Length: 82
Length: 392
Image (cartoon, rainbow over all chains, first blue to last red; front, side, top):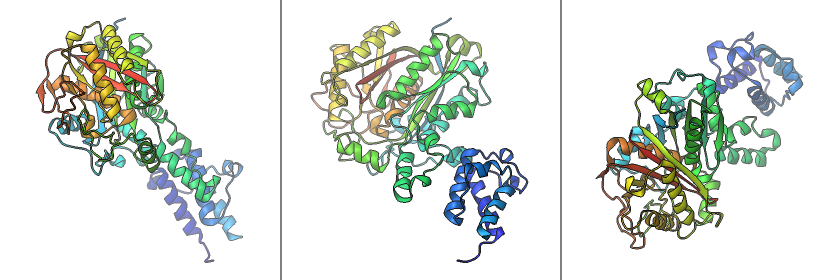
């Protein structure tokens, strides 16, 4: 399987957040979910997407540990590296 | 507390277009919103009216309700919020089925990819009360809010519930309506399976060749408020909701009583509630679904209520099909615009009168005589709801 780069994951997560209704210009690594109007239902959808595309399982307790966009991207990157 | 309730805003999305004006214009000029045997809102693109987030967080029936409600609220001059305490404004929106498109889509995800593939948005999209909750949320209306679920009478029940709410002083105003987006593979197969839908694909209420209803989709919305408040703020008043009644056939789960007994009683009760007699009624905006059973039962009921000389009858379903839970609301909008225009629009495709119907069915636009308009809604489940509208 081809290696998945960090940039690809970042782009995929951003694309997902935009599809949820977030404004692309407001999305940054430091952005908190509330600030881009992403709620717990969106995060469950994000978890479904990363599981489907990268085989990374993001559980509810994991999501509680990721208050920002960057923390979610890092979570996926770390687990696709292994 | 005044018990008089005015309608100060109207909104509609129908197969004839987006906006209440497109409904009355298209209907009056004999345009048909039905294509290939279905009354789809083809011109409706939710993203033209809603944000991306609103669009994806709403099933199509809720999207339709949001757009119709916004038109009604805009027209009432309430686009930026109601002029009264939002906690005193209600929101009641009916539907026949709710988010059946979402149910089918998510069921397919479940079957094909397993339980974990089911969307976290499935419940908020599919629930039948979603339209009422989402419209209230969108406009910050914090009073009484729920959905009515009574099939083809849901929109009329929502209007009646809003009327009583305002009359009883439980709210100053209420946005009411109905929404349906049930043109899906499962719903089409199910209605066809029970023999309810038209094989010819033509909606022809009261016509001798009618062979079932044509599925339609859409949403209608109205702003109801206390008449003195509407007068005091110089609102444009479309009419007054002077009477309402609802009852049940308790006869058969989907077939109407063959002589329309429940429908008859319901019309009588509505006129009593309005404090008027049959002579004061100028026109009946019929339920007129184009099914053999409904139209003959409804015709029998109208004849028995009005005696030898029933007022002219029309049905908008010839032009847009049967929009189920939206129908009662869209027909209320249609009746109020009929009052405003002073012209009764024709029943589309009414070309071969059925001798058994014995009603004055309007086949070409005709002047509306002075008087009140009765709007009928009769539903699977045996539910009947009748609304009476009048000019101020």
